[in-house]
Each structure stands twice: as C-alpha cells, then as structure tokens.
Length: 320
Image 1 (tube, helix red, strand yellow):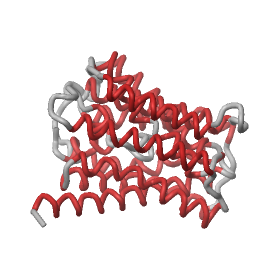
Image 2 (tube, one colour; image 1 turned 180 degrees about the horizontal axis):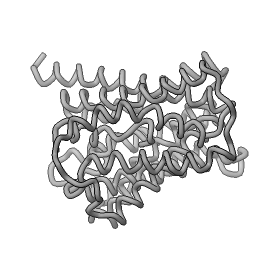
Image 3 (cartoon, helix red, strand yellow; image 1 turned 90 degrees about the vertical axis):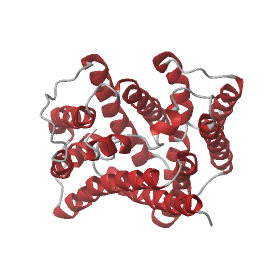
C-alpha cells in the first residue's frame, strides 16, 4: 500500500471515530432532552466548555483586538450558530436519531445553494441535479401528506439551514477575521441568550446530570479534534464522506437505547441524500469544478456551541 493510501486509510478510521464521538454526544443530548429544555442544555454545555476553550485560546498569542472586522457578518453567523444549537438539540430530543441525521445531511446541499450568492460559486448542471435529487431525498424522509410533521422535523430543517449559513459565512470572512473571533462570539452569544432564557425553563439538575452535561462539552471538542487529525492525515475527498457513518451510529444507538427502528422511507431518503452529498464532494474535488469548495471546507458536521467548527479550531492551533 502506498504511503498516501495508508494515510488515507488511517484518516478515514479517525474520521469514523470522530463520528462515533459526535453520535455519543448526540445520544446524551437526546437522553437529557427528555427532562431539560434545549436552552438549559446549551447554557450549561457552553458554561462547562469555557475552561477547555480558554486553554485552546491560550495557543493564540497574537496581541490583537477581539473586535470583529466584519461585525455584521460575525453577528449574523453568531445568530445562526445559536439557532442551530437550539434547533438541533430540540430535534434530537423529539425525533429518532437516524431521522434527525438524515435531515441534517441535507446541509451540504444547502451549502452549495448558499455559496452561489454569498461566495460567487458557479454551480453547473451536474451539481444542481445532485442538489435537487438530495432535496427530493429530504421530502422522502419527511413524507409530507403521509406522516405527521412535527416541530422536531421543522427544527432539524432549520438546524441544517442555519448551520449551512454559518459555515458559508465563515468561508466568506475567514481570510480576514481572526479564528478566535469566529470561535468565541458564538460561545459568548449562546451563553448570554440561553442565560437570559434560563429562568423561564430551568429545572434543577442532580449531580449525575451535570456529569452528563460535561460529557456533551468534552465530547463535542474531542470530536472536533479528531476531525482535525483526520483532515491533516488524509485527503478531504476521502475523509469527508465518512461523516455519513453517523447514520450507522444513530441506528445502533437508537435501537439499543431508545427502542427506535428505521422505517423504509427514512432509509430510502437517507440513501438519496447521502448519495447526493458524496457526489457533490467528489465534484468539488475535481480541478476546475469549484472555485471555493464550500462543501469540502465545511467538513460536514452541524456546528453548535458544544461542537465548534473543526477548521476554526485548527486555524487557532496553527496560530493563523
């Protein structure tokens, strides 16, 4: 096996591990979501994550202001990240895990669409066909008219859309804006907004549940670091499709812990969405096809305050 082939194999395995860590993070969110509101979970998740992130930020030794260079875009991205967290946590608390993932997998399709007006991306017929096909897959999962659509389904769709928007904004301003700003503003915004909502939704938490909250905070960062390692080790076109292994983790966890069973439309719709997403990744990797590679640079995972964007963490660790 060639050196690059060996590196890609290791990178793929690391990425599979990262998706397993993220899936465990989401299982804990779902378990706690049966008792606590998303606002309370996000507040304590960000609170417990601050010490870890503070250590990471110490790696950035540049003596520069934390003032945003693009305040409008940074605030919009912060708002998108906050909405993503609330929506994703609500969806995980109220829908089967595999169904939530299937809907969140539409994020690369939405990134492709949003990259057109925001990044000036040129999307030609084949990628448009993949986007349309993937959105058909979303409709198969949702089954409008055949199954009852709930707030959980709407929340998952909103999370996919706002996470895609946050990722494209980060791609748009990332060359000018400090990585610390892109990481810290959503955390502080989430802490303030969820803290303001906390008195209206607070339920006392026993020490065991606070321990589970620490798992959410720690596992979100561990998953992000494993993604960094995977992308450093292997080619993005090999690593990126591994994100879809989350559906396997979700199926196993859902069956073992929550007595969830996959139905036919969810399996079919997820397969269509995944095939479309992988095709878009492969097309972006071809020279001359994409000027921005928005989906490859997004790295697949919906960004929340407990699971920050791995590319931003990588830039901080590289002092960029």
